[in-house]
Image (cartoon, rainbow, N blue to C red):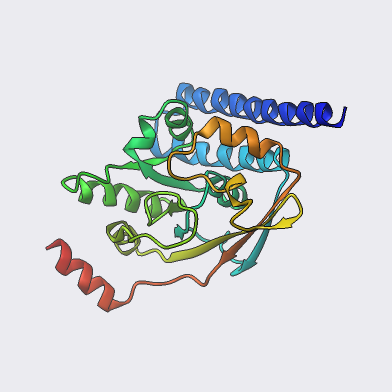
Length: 250
C-alpha cells in the first residue's frame, strides 16, 4: 500500500509540473499577441519564468538557501554559474527574473527547445565562431536594457567532478554593456534527507546522455532537495580587462 501511495504521489507531482509548464506556455504564447517589441517580450517571459520556477520547485520539494551577496536584486548583472542540472535554471530564476544563454542544440531539441523559446532564452552557436560578435552584442543589449543575463561558462551540465574549460568570449558582453559580472555557485546539499554523495547525486544532477523525462520522473519521487545558492561579490571590469578585450576584437 505504501508503495502505491508513493507512486500516486510521484505521478501527481509530475502532472503538477506539466500543468505549470502548460499554463506557463500558454501565457508566454499570448505575449506575442499584444507585445511586438522583442525585448519587452523577453522581459515579460523572464518574469513568467521566475514565477513558474518558484511553483515547480515547490512541487518538487526543492528548498533554496541563498548565501553571500544579498543585493543582487537591486541591479542587473551578467550572472555566471556552475551547471549541474536543469534545476539550476529554476533555482536562479526563482530568485530573480533572468534570461539564460543556451546553445542552438538545445533550441533544436524537442520539448526543451520550445520551453527555452517561451522562457525568453538567448541562443549561441558554440560550434560557429563567425557570428560570435553578433551574439555577444545581443547579450550586451539585454544587459543595457536592465535584464539579468545568466551564462553557464562550461557550456554543458556535468557531474561536478571537474571544471570544464570556460567559454570566455561571452564575458565581453558585460564589458560592452558596462555591467558587473555576478559569480554564482550552486551546491546541492541534500536529497531525501541525506547528504549528497556519488551514490545519490544522479537523482539531481542531469548530464551526459541522461534522458530528460525519465530523470524528471525520478526527481518527482524525491522526498526533498536542499540547494545552496552562493552569490559572490560582483566583479567589475578593470581597464586592463577592457584593453585585453579590445586587443582580442580588433
